[in-house]
Length: 513
Picture 1 (cartoon, rainbow, N blue to C red):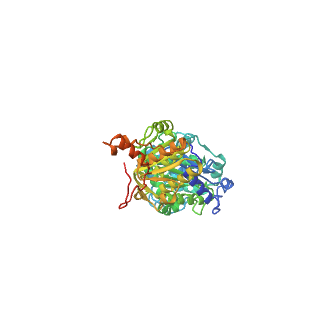
Picture 2 (picture 1 turned 90 degrees about the vertical axis):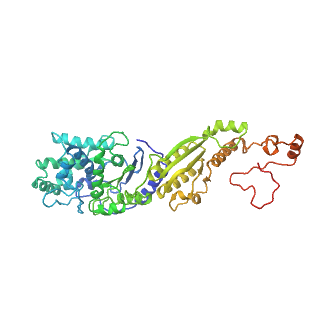
Picture 3 (picture 1 turned 90 degrees about the horizontal axis):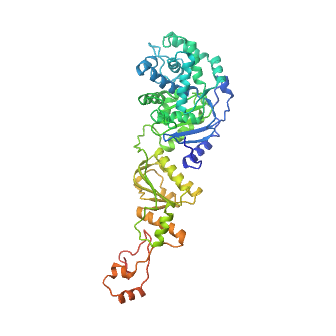
């Protein structure tokens, strides 16, 4: 797993969100399971894992807790692989229930649970896990969830025993399923398996990695191993979208628009396909059994970065087309021998990034991460936007945060080139908000300016060599004596890119070459 610098712009954003909601005290821990009432009600952690395997986290992101109902979509995927889609659909439907997670609701006529995300559906699904013994069946569940997490998970035996002793409502659900022949045998054995499944321990980093595995088409972004068949991932994400937040699912998908699953242990996972997995842990629950802080965090991220699933992005694999230093790539400016030597030796102090495609959250975050890391060791960064087709509001926030961090944490000079106003699908104007950034409409001018700064820092002046008059094409055909007269009566004046040498209609006795 790739670790990140805690001063990265998105890491700072997470810190801000964490500070914003850590004071929230609404909700109560789940006390109907006695062991869950013993947890720290104020525990709070956030983790986000992108599909390139990078994790960004804040708070108690490595605090373990029982995943409870967050196990449901992953076990559902396992059973889909075991039995096939049609067989599983004969056991459990995929319709939103609109009921609480522990409701005793079955489909009229068939007796099927309405979906695999409510307890009735999850118990039916768990009863379908293959294995010759109960222990082997649980080990299959534990191993599958461990593969999603990228490490070996374990069970909280105290919570398991507590759920087993007090789980009378789930026991009633199980016997109703047995009555309708949805579960065909051994109701207590299968219910015990379900209690163990809910008692598996994980932390935010684990759950964000598990969610990101679904975001990454079933391939764990850390281990690179496929955990679930690619064709089944959309089915799992679909039931998460429709039913993952119980009787809040409709409002969730309307407001936030991302597949999610909550658990009464205080966790919430969120998936943005192709981009990231998010996990939040905070045990205080609302009346629907969803983490209060977790819901607030997810709403804030979705709002700030425009993450709604139905907002269709056109995302390239990477927006960094190329990256190079000025050691070998130069501007068109003619340099003296000394200037050339300086650039040959120190041109690697300046890094150029050529961006391409659309800058949205995940592509912009990866680019910002790379630029910021370069800024920690380079003296100049040039970012070229010529091939960028659009920059949305979320990307603008990341760029703005990156600019602030570079100015605060490094002495690196940041230069933006060929960044037209038409690129921005946002109210943020980076030119107006960031006076510390140097903007150039022409890439060659940006490189030339950067070269001048590098040379001036070492020799104390800009390296713009004088062109001898006898080599100037304006003096072609003149005699040596004439050139000498011109030389005695003129002086060389240099203009910076963007300066006006003469205005229309203005009289001038200057010679321009």
